[in-house]
Each structure stands twice: as C-alpha cells, then as structure tokens.
Image 1 (spheres, rainbow, N blue to C red):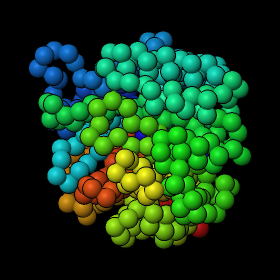
Image 2 (image 1 turned 180 degrees about the vertical axis):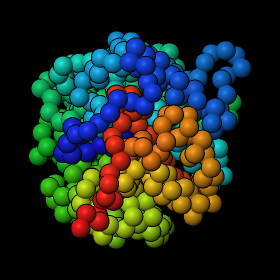
Image 3 (image 1 turned 120 degrees about the vertical axis):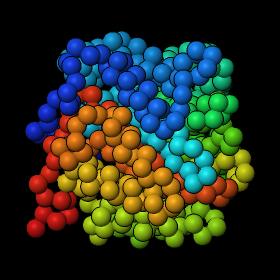
Image 4 (image 1 turned 90 degrees about the vertical axis):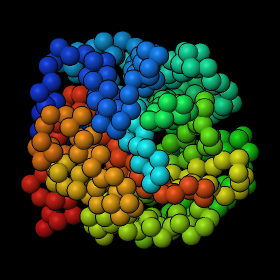
Length: 392
C-alpha cells in the first residue's frame, strides 16, 4: 500500500532519470519486468496452466498510462510514489509463510480531476472483479462517502493485489479510498460513518481516543481500505499519519490491539528509522484493521516507517530492513534479491527505492514485516550527503 504523505512535497530537486531505463520503454513494460523478476526472486512461478501471474492484471488497469513511454514523464502528479509513478511494489514477510508479492496501482492516473479519477478507478475495479470473480459490493456500500459529486483530498481510488507462492493460495484484492473526499475537516466523520456501515461503529470511540488524540493537525486520517475477493480473513482498515511523533507515542497507538503486542513497536521504529527522537520528516503511519472476529476492537495493527526519509541512501535502508527482519527470524536475504530485481543501480547511488518498512501484528497471526519499493519509473532521488536527523 502506498503511504506517501500528501502534505510532503513530491518535487525533488536534483532527481536524475531512472537508472539505465530506455525512455522508449512504456510504463507497462517497466512494471511487468519488475513484477516478473520480483516474483522469481521470491520463488513465485508463472501458473502452469499458462494463465499468467495474476498481478499482471493490475497493470492492465492503468489503461492508456501503461502504454505511455517513460520518457514522456508521469501521466499525472500521482501520490503513490515520490516520482509520481502510479504504482508501487512490496514484499510481505511472515515467519512461517512464504514471502508474498504485492502490487498497487492508481487506475485513474490519466484523469485530470479527482471525480474522473474516481470514475475510471471504479470502472477498472469492476472489470477486474468480472475477470477474477469477486464482488465490489463493499465499495458500493460507501460510494457516497468517498466519491461525492465534488471531490477533495489527494486521490480517488487505489487498487492492490497480493500473490503468494502456494499454487492454490487465495489472490486477494485491496481498495484504498480517501476519507478527505468531503474535505480534510470531515475526514473523521467520514471514517466513523464508514466503520459503522461495516458493523464497527462501537470501535470508533477507542480509535478516536488512542489513534487521533492529538487532533487532525498532528494525527491525520489518511486512508480507508477494504479487502475484496478471496481472503481468509477480510479486513476494514483505517490509516492515520502521526506528524512529529516519537517511537514511544507510536507504540501507544498500538495498545489498541488486544494481547500486549504493542511492546515491539518502539524498537521496530527505532531500528528502521534510526532513532531520530521525533520523526519530524515524513510521519509514521498507523493502520488499524477490523474483522468479523471482533466488532469493537481492532484485530490488527501496522506501523509504517518511511525509511527513505531517515537514511542517506538505499544501502542504509536495506541494512535497516534486513536488521528488522532478522530480529523476527525472517529471511533477510530476500531483500538483496528484490533490489536486484527492481533496478540495476547500486543501493548507495540513490534514496527512495525502499520507501517504507512496516511491522504488522494481529491477534491471530505471528508478526509480519512488509517492505515497499518504488518502481523509480521516472526519476531516482540522489543520495543525501548528511543523514536525516544529524544535520547539525
């Protein structure tokens, strides 16, 4: 899932064209190559029936944008990635399960308005649902909340898919929408109503008190997400950006999750973020997920650390991601294979290829770690000469 902060500038001075990429290569070709190589690096093979990797279906949702040469630049100022690539890839690590590969896209990225973006996104989602045989009823249930006649916010609809190594593993689809569609000042009201429509109205008071207690200027509701299709345990998720927060304060949000799992959050934030004291660059992001197992308490909590804003280059980001994985007994060597699958450049030659590293905890599964990658389709952000948080 993409987690770029809309309040953080995406104009990066000094960017260089994406490493060794022919400008005539289309966005679709670029992404297909990365998806295939990333799947190969994690042991995910093409289906034996010749149907192709399900993840490649998502690239088709980009429509005309997939046919656009990289040399023409991004089709719109998308907030999915810092260079406006309308797609993001990630790996999901579990202690006892094979690594999963994920792809997120913005289907309406060629639109010139949020309203058109939303229409294109829902049309693409409906086409994917027909192809994959799942229902979009959950999205229709909250259309008036997230797709008003005049939209505000930073995006309209993102769509993601996850694929695992097991031949018969379910292929789940995720949809992300913006609670600020009616204006930033109404984002809490929209999120509360959306939770209520899915049967989680009783969860709101504790969520408001713990996750947004500092007010909308510092604890900002960013995304609302829905699991569609074939999931073992479908979820409803709410994301909050915590501006100028400490690792201890981020851990306090995790106490919403029953079972005492919050204790890992502070150390994880410090391992990945480099212990800056307060995270004053790009904010930490919490995600609270709710399932039919409990209508009042979250079943899951994720903390997303924007590692790219707290390292001088991707070599350090890789070291921190692998350290976090090793602490939880996971295969850290996959990260190096993933980097080689994503780009031919050296990690030390840029920053931002590894965008986020996240700790996922739930009441029914062991801890997991997600590592998010930018396709760097258009630009590579140059390395910093000074590590963030140590400017002087």
